Image (tube, rainbow, N blue to C red; front, side, top):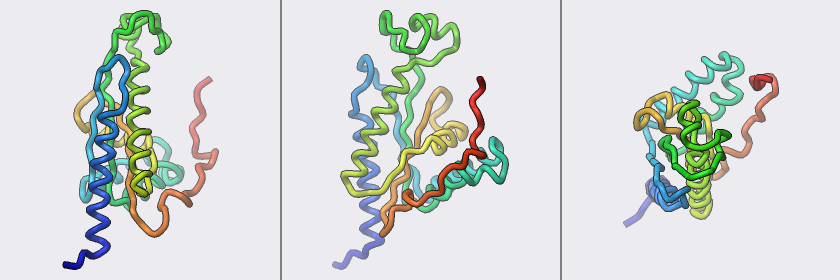
Length: 192
């Protein structure tokens, strides 16, 4: 039997995406609480995510500036064979005397509508573990806030989930390498 390269590459991407999800699941988590979620998008679902990214970019930055960040990332999503989404469900850990969130503790954080820092620490560790797994499989990948934001706005897995996206690509040249740099004109200044 002869297996053609396209078929093998599709199989390799699915294998790598599954391993990335496993790496995110087994990554260390603060206070031993697992609030990590994973999903893999291909085909029409991947295209819908890219469309949502274009929509957010145009809405938040205007059509011209949208192409610099969200549009560029959406083009990468379309060119990749899959997108691994890794999310963290918002929760408060109840770690005594923590204050890492900037509030006195979980009670004060909740009362102020703050977010537990451990949610984002866990998400960062899970995403890093997944990206390393893709790299070990020699699959090109890039962690994208923009893809995660689009997943959030699309309502993947309901409210109170913060997502990051990692497109995965197998090609003769890394599609994430020669990306245009984000111009300073496209950036929205932080309030003082």
